[in-house]
Length: 436
Image (tube, rainbow, N blue to C red; front, side, top):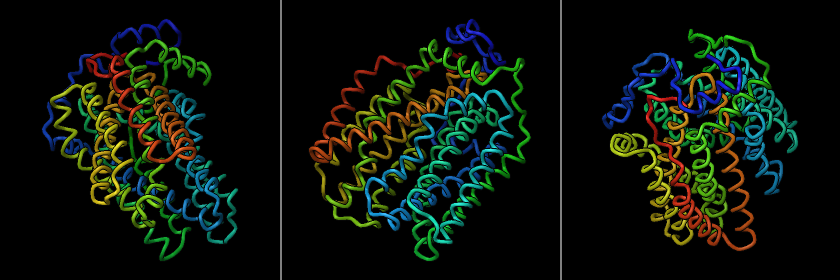
């Protein structure tokens, strides 16, 4: 039931059980290494997962197409970087509003509306591209508009997870969703390169629009119950209630603090890898794609074979602690390793450690949030992690510009190691039978 005053927010923050989930025994930590795939037996989740995989592949194709199109339109590094920034900026400003809406209204209809928006934006950009009417400014504007759609959709989709899987399956569902992201990382860029080379950029945009339509059809066919609050609230009061909850929910604050600090440091490799591949490794576009794929392979292998085993034996705090130290070692490794085979090994471990930490933070957020504030809480998770990655990427780029990439990676590695020990007090393992 939605909470309509600060007193109820305070009660939840103190750990009073949510009636929808109290007493549910968490079973995820006793799953076998392949049991994660068993969650696909749930028909609704299976449909969402398959459609989501297609949508993520389309998203990668859209991103590759936009970046490639900008290189055709301009040789300015700033404009090329701005295409990526335009996709992320809306999340920082709209995620909380989107999460509040996801908690207030029927998520099913809300997601359908947002997906129609993304289809319209993508097809319009495809048409303008095909007609040769796109300018750098227009491309950035349409990328920003598409980013608005993503910022609005993701909190609602994340909050829907526990509407389509039982609480005992949340760890497996989050693992499978993260796995689909990394499978799409392997497939999407490769398909985009082949399609762009054969038919141009516009068809890649069309494929993305079709992927949205596929996902929209699955959401439309879903007959899950809409969220009907017992008492209507304004958007502002709904957002305020969410903020009050977060201010009092210590365990959820721990997820935000550790996650944002972690991705602030880990973003160094993602931010500098394109330049590192070109200038230090002498790699072309194909080589850069291979390096990105190596990160994806590490993440996929970890999600399938390693994450379930770790979750069955260790707490999330221990997993994040050691995975963060591995990431610190890989950040130092990319600053000194130049043999391409060894460099690929370093990227493989980076991808695996990144996946472990991302899974742990996502599961911790899902498990600690009660249903009435889940959309807002997950939107704040998005904002926090995105701010960490964006701020870190900018900082490491500035440091590399004034010193060198090696120095930037060394500082990032040291900061990651120090931060891992400094944030160990913020616990993200909790008794999953309780709701904050």
